[in-house]
Image (tube, rainbow, N blue to C red; front, side, top):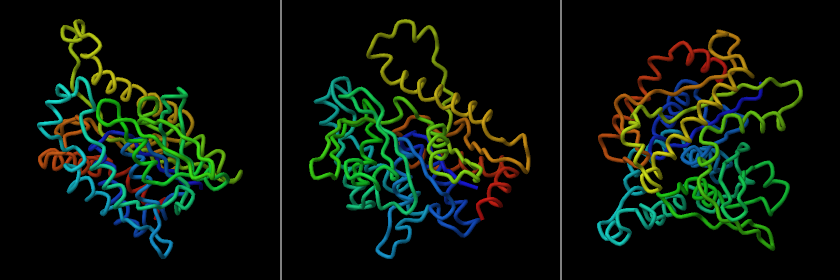
Length: 323
């Protein structure tokens, strides 16, 4: 089988897939890169995809799943740190991005260094959107290995895919070609927050003809906060900016899940299952993508623990297939 991992976007809620993948590493005794033939991610999922596949000097995975969980749980506050002065000068986010990109870029340099997309241990696909050319842009290891104009530093890949509108400013990314192509990129979540269908299509092009596709799709929690009609009916452009992002991301994620249930055997097929979707409604944790408080990190871990408990039967089948 050709085994594929897809990871949704969701900011600090990336704690949830990070916990699940740490659990899988412990249960299988394999690194994430050893378990899968292709890893695809959007936004926080793109950061994780890069982190799981960057090489150390011996050609092995530089980071364990626990390492990346610590990035979120212990250092997430550095990424989503906001000074009073920045809030004052930006009218609390109305006229500027909410957060400086510099702490995020510092952490990406620390974790990814100058590693290149073409050198990932396993192929990855990471989504972004080109605001100048008005088109999706897919960072692909397969493309990077064939053309330097599609090759990039992983730290730039991770920064571009997580440049969520209103949170971080867009990222100018240049390819590694002698005459580099320049792109202005934002978070791929604006068009595909759940990249599982992108993962399926890429797998179709990379797998051997005889290989069946096996796909694990990890969510970052489903928002349950209601948007009341009496509130929304009077919102103007500024009022809708943040809520519309959440609505778009949730709707697209559900659609991708529905389509893959039609394409691959899901949990209703028991032992024949080849499509796994692990996600949960956020009944305890805050659904804000930037709440990196100690309490919310703890609550996100608790939400992930509930998935592990609730989906024990699925996880048993999953671990058996990946082990």
